[in-house]
Image 1 (cartoon, rainbow, N blue to C red):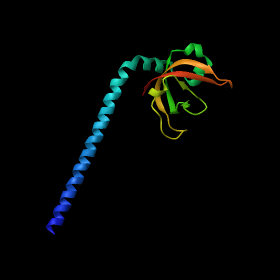
Image 2 (cartoon, one colour):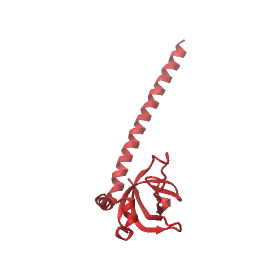
Image 3 (cartoon, helix red, strand yellow):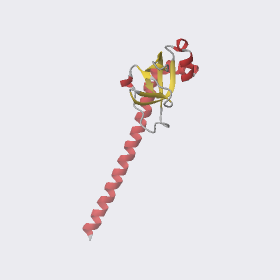
Image 4 (cartoon, rainbow, N blue to C red):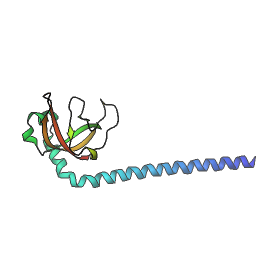
Amino acid sequence: MPLLKSAKFILYWLKAVAAGLLIALSVFVVVMAVAGKSRSSGPFKPMISEAKALDLTYEQVVSAPAKYLEKHVIWCVQNRSREAVYYLDEPRRLTVENHPQMPLVIGSKHSSCEKMLLQIKAVNRTYSGSVIPEVKFISAL
C-alpha cells in the first residue's frame, strides 16, 4: 500500500509541475507577442497614421485610382492563397505584389479576416471589366 500512495503522490506533483510549466509558457508567449507587436509597429507608425486619417474603403480606391496611388490603407483582408485575396469578402478581390510575405488567414471564408497595413500600388482592369486594386503588403496589425 505505501508504494501505491507514493506513486499517487509523485503523479500528483508531476501534474502540478506540468500545469505550472504550461501557465508559465502561456504568460511568456503573451508577453513576447505584446513586446513584438509594439516593437514592430514602431517603423510603421507614420503609415498607420496616414491610413487611419484617410480611412479609405475599397470602393473609394476603385472609383478614383489615381487619387489614392501610393497611399496606405488598413483593411481587413482574407488571404487564402495567391489567387484568393479579398477585402472583407469575396466580391472585392485584391492582387498583392509581395504575396509571399503576407500571412495566410485561416478560418471561415465569410467571417475571417485579418487587419493589414497595405499600400495602394495600382488599380487594374480585367478582360471581363472588373476593377482590382493591386497592393503591397506592409504589415499585419
